[in-house]
Amino acid sequence: PRSGGAGGRSGLGSSRGWEEGLDGASIPSRPEDQALPPPLASSAVFGDVGSKPVGLRLSPEYPRQWIPGGPARPKDGVSLPAQVPFEFETELFKGKAVVYLRGLGNTPERVFKGKARAIQFSVQGTFKREVAMDDLRFGLSLARPLRNLPTRWLLNLCTRVVQSLGAQYSMDLSDPTADRPYMLAPIVLAAQTVSCAARGSEPDIALPPIEDNASLTWLGHGGKGVGANERRRKIAKIIRDAKHARKKAGVPAGTSPGESMRDGRVPSFDVDSVWTFSFWQSQIDVSKYSVDLGVGKFDLVPIMDGQPIALLCQTSDASCVGFRFEVWHERLLQKAHSRQAPDEITERPSRDSTPTGDSTNSTTGDGSWTNSTAGREEAPEEAPARPIV
Image (cartoon, rainbow, N blue to C red; front, top):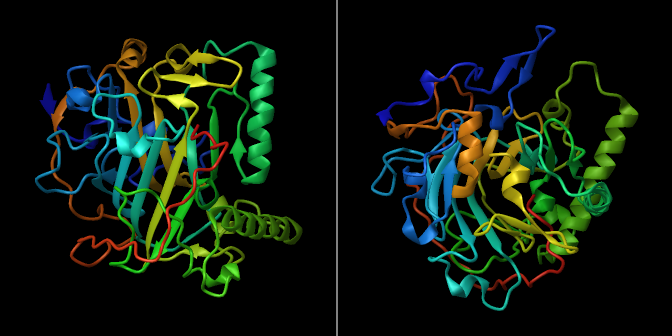
């Protein structure tokens, strides 16, 4: 075991996540390429007995994202608690999150009682710069192929189901057999609930998720707000119309996806409001690391080939990370360690400021979170819930 930081690893590109392509041009290095080596079973990632055999980890680390200093910051700087809120900061976002997982020793019964969901995840905070809503994606992106996939007919069935959801929610997804599989959708459409609130009026993420879009008057609701399904429908249409308009206008060669999306055709996440995104799904049971595809349950460990499920938010060109939280299972480690030597760093220095050279600025204020949910209702259970991955 040793102490250290990200500086000792090579081949990760610059702090903005860019690397040189085969033609000499700069291309974005995806967050999974900058992820930490797999954790040891004895590491702090698996240190909470109540969460075993599951562990959560922030990865990649500084300067893309980090855990602020303070009494709650772990010595390794990357291990995260399950079932309770934790603070984090990235190059794009500053706030807190909570990951509720069913079937563990420390699972809070109140979160899952009467609900089919197996994972409930909420993230809340402020953006460091404005980001177009179609430029911020949520989902899963892997560095290596999936292995031991189900039979071809079942794979085709699952692909058709996911593609139908993808068309509805502007999802970009690869073929399951791709060398680098991914499934990403605009976070504003992927989230089951979204809240946009003034500082001091944001919901408590430890309580049931709520939809609160009353301040998004461009939705055409006269300031009264709409339900989650209507929010998705209206924003999905705005994104589709913008995509068609860009295609018709033509995009100059060499323009990155992020640049083309900053044309004002789609509203942006602002820097003044506190944004809360909540997700849940019932297909993946991380306590067993299995997935229920409706026609059968499958063990994810041989399929993932030592790679963890990661709750990922990034810009469309992968140049900025909103967050990336890995969900590990001890059964993944044998294959993971055969692919890459484990992470032996036990202590990392505290990082409480925006990385040097980053063009964004940290949010101001005292960082306190006063919660109020007066006049708002809990979002209803929606079926079927879309899978996180």
